[in-house]
Length: 476
Ligand code: NAD
Image 1 (cartoon, rainbow, N blue to C red):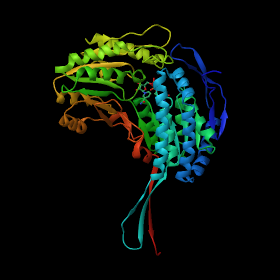
Image 2: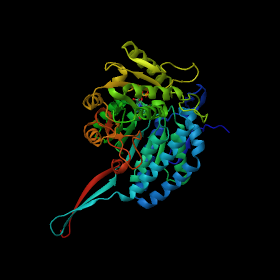
Image 3: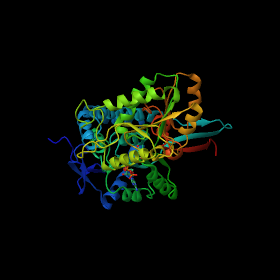
Image 4: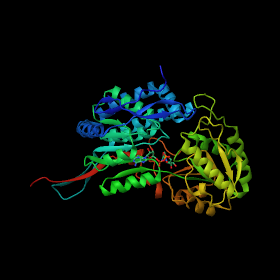
């Protein structure tokens, strides 16, 4: 039996096969399967199904919803190994990271299901006989667009939020890494989710967003992807007065203060940067290191980065898989050539490995001038940019100097540095002394160009609701 699933659309509780486009294995560029493209008639059906699904699901009690959602997450946990293998095949990440992504996705969905039981409203004090009740109701049909870098957990965030809050959803997942969303949806279908509550389509992204966003019954758009596409979709949402959750790119600063152990922080930074080969919106990228420890930090970072085993993610000892597509290789080559030309120093990596599969090593670029393109544009790949700073003032100023504001990191043992960083770094998520940017229970999202809205946490679920105030005078 093939380790890669036969992909289908899921519309109104029915699996549909269609012609489409090939899905490639980034480790050897072989064809894994075909992702079906939805026709306009399929999209019409998905919309009608989601409208019916919303009526059913929004009228199902939160506890009954949670019970059904838990059946699906039990199937996800049971099937985690086959799901992880398919993910590594289509996306490239090391199998251990793929396994973690599946478990994390199950946790996110379960947390949302439980939080759905606590979508409390409130009663506002008023004159006798009058009651103002604030209700939080599921917003309606959700149109969701998920990217190729987290084929399972990104769709899971959107499906978890929508279903936890009582919404129905049409998910348009990545055509480049479609198996994650397919297997996620299959777990819900097999768990007995009512037809129409969750629908899965693929196709030409612009055609699907242009179809779904203007539909009157679509009440919320959630997108994870690049800043330019996010701005384009947000403008469409504005034109149709639709709220949007936009999880866009980042360019995470890491401020390394001179009161920490540079060898330890350097090695930890290499591991943090290597996650999913840097193809992560919260990947640590711009390292601003105080000058006293700059050389030691850079040396430790370089040594650890150079030691990472690069190869096919299905081999258990591999720590850095291939990049997900050839666009990322072209981008890395461009950023490296530009930084070199502007005087930066490559301390390890810097060039593609082989020409079969999209392998690129973890690359450390030291002494990066501020005008290097990689310092301003999100590399979205295994590039770490290390710069020397005089003090915390300079580090904070440089950290905030880009239009992005998703995640930020800092290493310090000083409570006053930590407090200042908490106040002054312009990001949605700041992690001090570690590299985990989010979990199921914490709100995740950006400021500035990195997006609007949150996924995860109480705030995430509230994004899938709408507030209604009911004023009731007891006697007419
Ligand atoms: P891209 O800008 O072409 O596409 C980004 C995503 O948007 C893809 O998933 C694509 O399918 C989708 N998309 C594109 N046009 C769309 C449309 N009109 N309607 C709906 N969806 C549409 O870039 P890419 O080459 O696929 O990815 C590279 C860049 O995307 C990276 O540099 C990074 O900034 C960003 N990215 C961010 C995340 C994230 O987690 N925030 C994830 C993946 C990619």
